[in-house]
Length: 344
Image (cartoon, rainbow, N blue to C red):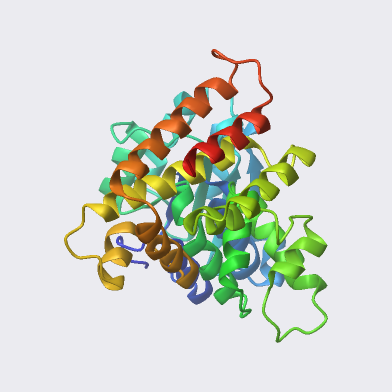
């Protein structure tokens, strides 16, 4: 039987492929990607195809009856030593949290020949619920699929590409993180599309691939805007903002504001660090790429701590005014005005 501590999605998938699973898995959380990934592995790897007709039951929350699901889980396998029962989209059950409590008695004493999987997407279940208490007592595996912080997306992108055995340029990582973003299902779907259309399967994913297949400009994007601001290249920065104004749907200002605010906030922290070495900056600011490090080092030379504080203040003013508070100007004109203030 699988050990209780196997709560990472990779650990669960490894256990599935080894067919060494716990009798109950409760999958919950905001990020649907990993829940779907685990369920997909159960469906394709836990049972032999010949055993699925009699030993696999799949239910959907919107029409699932608790008693019927429990009865299916309690049945013993037919001409096999294992059975699989999956309740998908449990969050769509009528009064879902209340209904899920009814599974607690079964989870307390599960059929050891059955693997019963509950997939509940959205907010996590309360740790004090009868279901999770029963899971804790019986050694069931409870997996929480958390939505990652946006500043961690580059690491998720690189990890996914590594799993797919494909390389990716740092700038391409930043473009995907900035313009595609969450949820992971959408982000990884776009990467899968980039991989599938590449003729040379050994090549890396580049900015040109993204521009051609996803429609994100490799020259006019938030990554290039930060590059320009870091070295105080005003003509380039304004050219990028004007391009944003021509393609507002592809370049929403809230995304730009968030990224610039994060950059200058990190810059302010860097100014007051006693140790400004690459290793210290990387550790304290979470800089993952060579370009991020280069931008931070350039900005430390080009902006004083006082100028950085003013830049943050200008961004806050822009955020307020772009929402129509105290200004009737177009948001991209306001952004250009804000960029101008950085240089004056």
